[in-house]
Length: 166
Image (cartoon, rainbow, N blue to C red):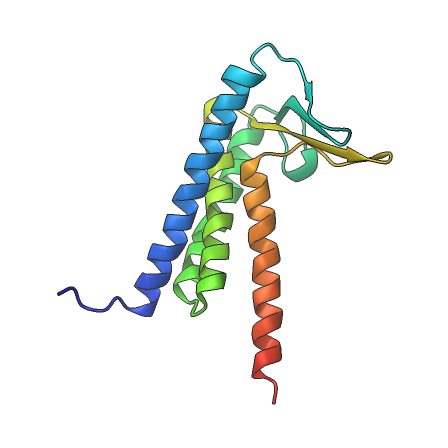
């Protein structure tokens, strides 16, 4: 019989499994979109508010700092790796499986986008949402994982805070 995993090891296993799933799904979705669906560079309208597009984001979230500086992919990747290290330390200190999974998907999203920067010098975004004159910057599965992970962390934190009050 295998001895019971410690809390930190259990959270690492949970979080890193979630990260790996996000990385694999993100990279597969980007490959499929870039090499199969959008290979000719065209955009595809799916609904009145959702398109598939080809966007190479050399900046950070929402295209911020999208400049033609050759060192940008490496500088942004270094920041992302530092954040991943901090998140991994935080992961080992979690007791909530929900928070551990959320941190894991954030780690996975960050690493998946670093993979793009290392391979292409930019992050491939392909989901374009717009409605009633409002337009969200193009994004990908890794970006979605990061966003969902942050929202889950906030909800988990608020829920635990509420539960601890008498």
